[in-house]
Image 1 (cartoon, rainbow, N blue to C red):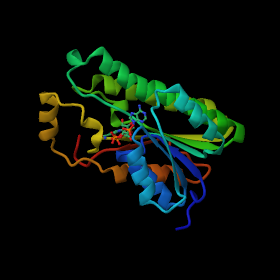
Image 2 (cartoon, helix red, strand yellow; image 1 turned 90 degrees about the horizontal axis):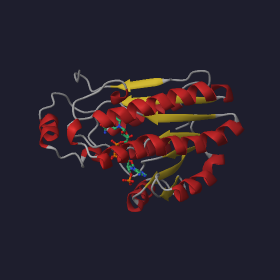
Image 3 (cartoon, protein in one colour; image 1 turned 90 degrees about the vertical axis):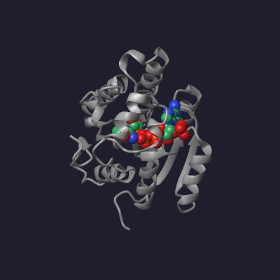
Image 4 (cartoon, rainbow, N blue to C red; image 1 turned 120 degrees about the vertical axis):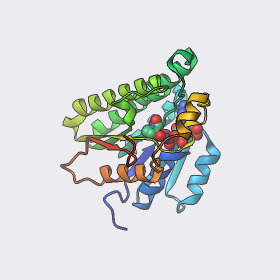
Length: 240
Ligand SMILES: NC(=O)c1ccc[n+]([C@@H]2O[C@H](COP(=O)([O-])OP(=O)(O)OC[C@H]3O[C@@H](n4cnc5c(N)ncnc54)[C@H](OP(=O)(O)O)[C@@H]3O)[C@@H](O)[C@H]2O)c1
């Protein structure tokens, strides 16, 4: 397949699972070189083995570790596209969320996401080109019961995406926010409150697939040079 992504270097956080993994597979099929990040090295090795040799480089580590961020910084000069995808969530009634739950979500979804984007975007300003994709959520514009702090982190991430766009557009850098509704991935595994489980069990729609979200990322990255899809919201049909 001949693609505008042929030969581009795309760094993806959270590529060891779910949406990030599907995005890595999809963009690799367009001929991109993938740098796949996540904490679980075995899962990254599986991704690498699933694609042609030489397509995927992996770098395992925790985005909340500054030493790991320094390793990422060394790769920054070669990164054409950054997919800022890693994220965590804990659903629970707002009065039952612990300070640790809240810090964990803000630390990973907002502060680590900001730090790594600053690192990669600085190198893009030198080259005067690049594309940043932020994986926010429908929860970046709405709030849901039992998702209070997660929604707050995604509102914050969306604000950061718009700020990067505002300040970096003069450097030829595009910024796209992809905002999906519910996808069945591992992300809800730590949310076992009975009210959360009951809400999921009685939902009346079919969730999106990770592939559908990956296709939206590909759509944004394949837009013509003068066109920047700023925000792509994806909802399961019939979910609202
Ligand atoms: N699933 C949904 O319904 C949904 C809807 C809208 C938006 N989103 C967003 O989509 C993104 C991907 O979520 P997903 O549903 O694909 O979840 P997932 O399957 O749980 O994947 C999350 C990814 O983030 C990585 N990650 C988490 N904490 C990390 C850390 N501290 N350092 C490095 N990597 C870390 C995980 O890798 P390791 O575990 O290997 O570290 C994993 O690859 C998230 O930002 C999420 O908020 C999800």
